[in-house]
Amino acid sequence: MKNIIIVGAGALGQELAWLIEEINDNNPEWNILGFLDDFAFDNKKSILGYPVLGRYDDYLSFMDSFFVVGFGDAVLREKIIRKMNSEELKWANLISPTVRVHRSNKIGKGVVIGRYTDLTVNCTIHDFVMLNIHVVLGHEVSVGQFSIISPNVTVNGGGRIGKACQIGANSFIRDIEVGDYSVVGASSCVIKNVDPESIVAGVPAKVLKVGRPNTSISRSEREDAQ
Ligand SMILES: CC(C)(COP(=O)(O)OP(=O)(O)OC[C@H]1O[C@@H](n2cnc3c(N)ncnc32)[C@H](O)[C@@H]1OP(=O)(O)O)[C@@H](O)C(=O)NCCC(=O)NCCS
View (spheres, protein in one colour):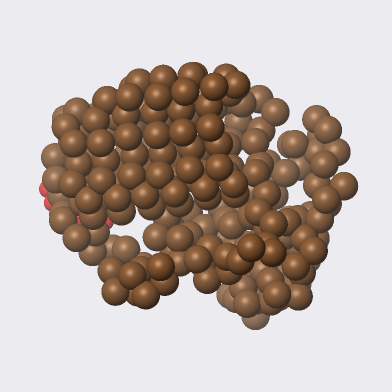
């Protein structure tokens, strides 16, 4: 069994604990050491029966373990991962045993794929992507680093999702490009290219905001981190 630590003990972090339990039920692979989370460390000793081991920065004390990041905000996810990233750190790929992936797909490191997701053929899933449950990716879809695709999303063959995008639940993305750092609202139908840093929603999707004002870190912070 390999030791694993979940960074972030919020809702998504807890769902990741469940995913790891599901993987272990199929084939015992991971020993969950616990969570690292600043807020939880000040308020709780354990979550879902797993200890809160420390704050985010305490990852340095667990360099022999694998890590997975449980942040549901793609930009915050990028920030934390860039801060932690080093050659020595081991990132887990967590893929539910119910996922179907053809051998022609390319999957990076630190990737999480939830229950009943299907990747058809020749897709490229870049590092640290999260594909939630019941996602369907058509042929040759590419999903950029740090992006998060919510439950029940379908991406048409040839669709391209940029870096650190957030695709809302139940949406359909045609064979278009969603620019880096963009957000697609829940239950949207996206039929035209989306400019970077835009928030779009609706059927068909229209631009709500440009500049992704709700993002948790600024452009200058992102550039500093690169
Ligand atoms: C699109 C989204 C990011 C916008 O959030 P926001 O910036 O806080 O926007 P607001 O809630 O202030 O809404 C702004 C306008 O957009 C509309 N709107 C918001 N979400 C919408 C959606 N999904 N589809 C269509 N219109 C939407 C609102 O009705 C409002 O319209 P109005 O100005 O005419 O009243 C958010 O509503 C959303 O859909 N998030 C995805 C949630 C999700 O799927 N999470 C994953 C869970 S696993």
